[in-house]
Length: 144
Image (cartoon, rainbow, N blue to C red; front, side):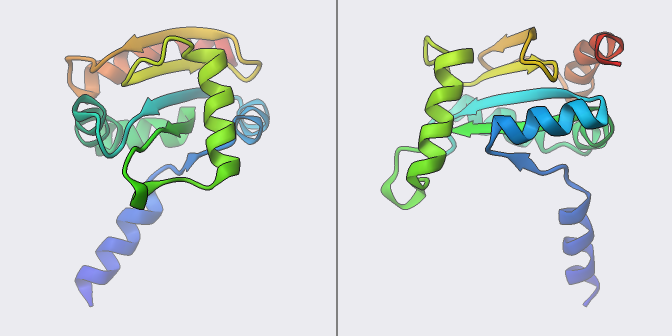
């Protein structure tokens, strides 16, 4: 029972990843947060999986994100069992057309609530989750 409670608490404390940039922009504007978009190939891109596990799912990043970021994941899985519904694929493709036209993976973009690009990470950022957060921190004042 204790394990189940721990899993539920751990799940609840994670900042959710949205799949709709319009909802993310609305939320970011209402809550005065920035938007972090992560372009990922969740079932085929090794650096994408490493980025997710080592940085984006770290407690340090999650705690920071819950206070300062709205998270959006644009996933492009290849395996049939992981395919997304058609509407989500269209949203992801539209997001890629706008922010990742060269189709880089992983590719992470920090934008404000109006869609203005503040910072980009091309590939796996070879740093700790603390260093990743430190790169975002100075940009927060621009969003408030």
